[in-house]
Amino acid sequence: MTFTNVQVPMFLKSKRNCFLLVLIGIISLCVVFQWNIQDKSKNIDFLLSDVRRKLASIEFSTEPACEPKRKIGFLKMHKCASTTLQNVFFRYAHINDLNVILPLKRWNYLGSPDLFSIKLVEETPWHHLGYDIMALHTRWDHNSIKQALSGDPAFVTIVREPAELFESLYGYYNFQNFFKNLTFFSFLDKLEDGGFVKKNDRFMGKIGKNQMLFDLGFPVKYFDNEEKVKKFVEEVKNNFHLVMVTDKMDESIVLLKHLLCWDYKDLVILKLNARAESKKKKLSPAQTEKLRKWLKADNFLYLTFREVFDKKVEEFGYEKMEEEKQKLSTIRNQIMEECLSGKKDLTGDSLIKAMR
Image (cartoon, rainbow, N blue to C red; front, side, top):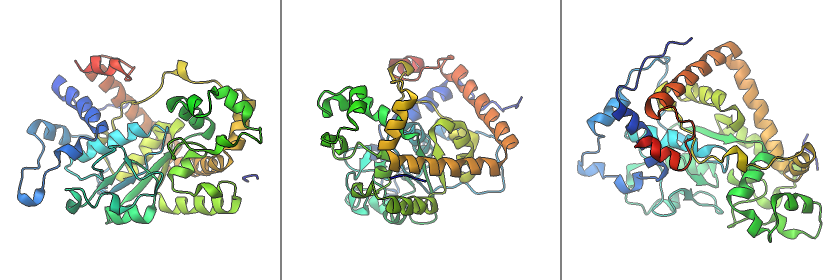
């Protein structure tokens, strides 16, 4: 089968504010909202502390003609830098007093391998408050998530080159044990072995082949059905306002900013949950093509949305995009210098040390 020198205002006023910015990001990853949500209907003080409000009220330039979006549905796609983006959405919700969709258990998942359903959160004590933001791992069901958020949400997700994504999955979930002690490269050698049935199985029933389509809710049994894949991808194009691209993160953040009409301060990102380059397997061109062929449905999805993304950048304007990227770069460098003493590595113990 084939598938055809910006001057940026200083917005961090003190080291304490710097510390809080990082702290809010880390707290969001633990999904602390579900332990702290209070019942607004009982007139319990639900406001953030004054010092947190200072972070929320910092002045920063943005286009004044639009209204910030407060309803967002974000599909947290596996191994697509989605934890970093989840941090952005949770921090925004925390500062702006918004409600997020959260389960009672399993913190970062709702559904999967089953599709998302509003029934998954109906028994939570905060369900009657309603929801503003969805940013968890799930198997996407567009109508159900739209119903859960209500109003007029912006729908966003992110894609990644599928061979790179699968290599990342293989190491992160230790597929070597799942595939009977096969190293990643041994697995590639077995892809053309007709007797190797387990290559199509899913770890924990939810991690494996064509992961992006799986996360989007596409049925596994139709992975090889070209017509159904194309029809589904067209539906995704109609349902999502923005599909970002992992290896074009700065451009993605710029487009996201203008879609949501947020300030730059809202889109400060710290790279989280990322592997060191030395841990990544280097594939030859032949190995990459072999893996893409096996992941042909996900590859079609990626190529489709890479084309859509590139067109959005063109329509936005290349010169304007470079100006916006420069602003983002300036802000990012400022935060690294003022909050983290210039530390670039934000993984593991280094982030904790930077906060002390």
